[in-house]
Length: 116
Length: 111
Image 1 (cartoon, rainbow over the protein chains, first blue to last red):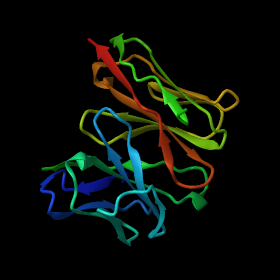
Image 2 (image 1 turned 90 degrees about the vertical axis):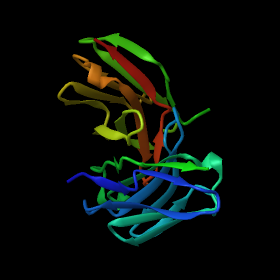
Image 3 (image 1 turned 180 degrees about the vertical axis):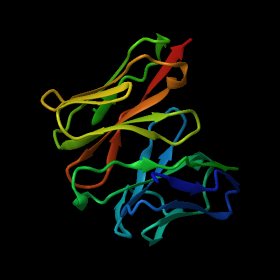
């Protein structure tokens, strides 16, 4: 099973709403990521969790709040977003780097977020 | 200068042709190299993963890495219309678990 599952697939939210994106994997991966992708652009890294601890935060605004409650789940909590935050939000997972070189990152299908 | 450069295309080829894609990079710390295919409005799908110089083949796909030239390539043989997508190269340094992507190349295979 090389599947990363993201829910919801689509989300429309107002600028005053609070919502959460969810990501789940059962591959035993201990590194999980959030990426943001705008149209016709490559994915941009937002956060990396390694062994359930936040290891990389790419200076993301605080209106995005990640959470890794266990080794299989990753959440992204959203609050007071702006219309320019509308994008495809991708989750990915991988073995943590201490597992050696034979690792590759798998992506979910993404949540298409529209902020109105 | 971006760390990873990739021609955005679009690259248009007739069905059955060989598709040739490449990326260059500037940082010799990159050790792991991946190619992803992304259809419109979908997540990236891993096609190939390599970490050593040389060639790796998987079905119609061949990935090539030349670390001395900081250059990677992906070849798609016998291309099909279903190969029409954006192809992203991605790289990772020896430590860090952070993928750096190229800008993506849009490929169109015409029947």
